[in-house]
Length: 221
Length: 243
Length: 59
Image (cartoon, rainbow over the protein chains, first blue to last red):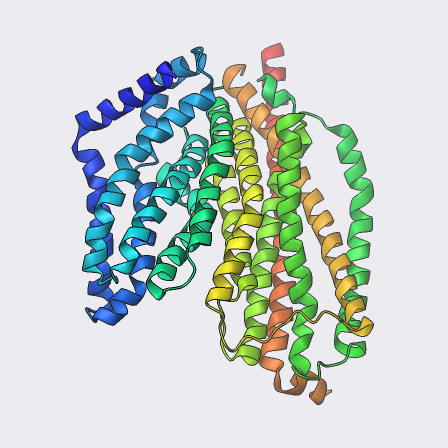
């Protein structure tokens, strides 16, 4: 546990030292959402109708943006090999990396989301559920993404390849995330969607560190 | 080097492949001929959809094959990860393009069927959508297989991906079904005719056999190609290091 | 015969579906066979080169 916390803190301090890098994800998130009113027109009812979907899709893309570097720098400078040799199981290492990734990308996205919801004319009934859904959904995105990030280590054309691998696997989170928010706005059922999102989170928490560690092991061979 | 030698000289496989291949080709040619004949001459036109229902005899077997190929890839990947059998990876790698082709055909023929039936080339129907995602999964697998210079790494990385993807297929299917019931397109004709008449079932099954035989034949050709390519790689390495 | 080709007015959908299917399958089969032949040729050439090299080094 101590080692886990140490790893998370190490990644966080690295991220903060680079400063701008983690800000960039949020800036991308905001710009991507802002493009939509410019694309489809400023009509409030249209924007309100698509707001939850647009915010979720932009969140998916932003969460993916910084994934490529999740293991890349450690892989290149050799510290990943040291981590693999240490007493800490590689699965826990993956989990620590994912936690740091979520804190630096998932959390800022959640903070920015309500502002974007206002810009997208979302009905205020949806705000709280949007935040809850993002809280439940974005960890799954980081977890699933970590598997993809481990698999592409050392490959050609990493970034584009990563999006090809990971985005189809994000579809369930997108569907239930949007559906929960739309449910809250439309005044119908949304608890089931949140429960399913939570289920995805628990499921990926149990399975992806394992797959991610397998991915790292084959990359280090 | 040791890893590459695992692939060298799978003589028994090649002998077996040589035995099976002509049979697979024969089964394909015969069942495709019979299947096509039945599809066009003995099967009745659908009372609602008329002659356009004949598209079913390529569409449905192609969609079966798309799922079948992905399953084969996942099983072969598991075998290659657990038992490290060299042929398992070769077969998974050789299956991917065939699976992608069948998945694409399922979508394209579905679209050609949908135009006269639903009045549009594409409907965000639950099945079409999940097959579309399946196509993405096939393409992602092929992209990862092609992204490494080192064959052993490509094999392991894509095997893990195939397994992760396979676990996700039912989840994606479930989500898409849920999503579709929320946004049910009004014009969709329900295709799930629970009681299909034997005169339509037989050509369907025979075409499915034809596609399976085709799969076996192309799979063996592609596996043989992969094995020769491995030998070429070993020769090249020898020339660089020993020559 | 003409009636058969018309497919009850659905000719524009039925025939492309079958044409595309068998066309793509034929293309994939051809590409696979061609890949096998090309790789085999490359192997033959390389192993012939290797033999020549060996003979040279024997002398």
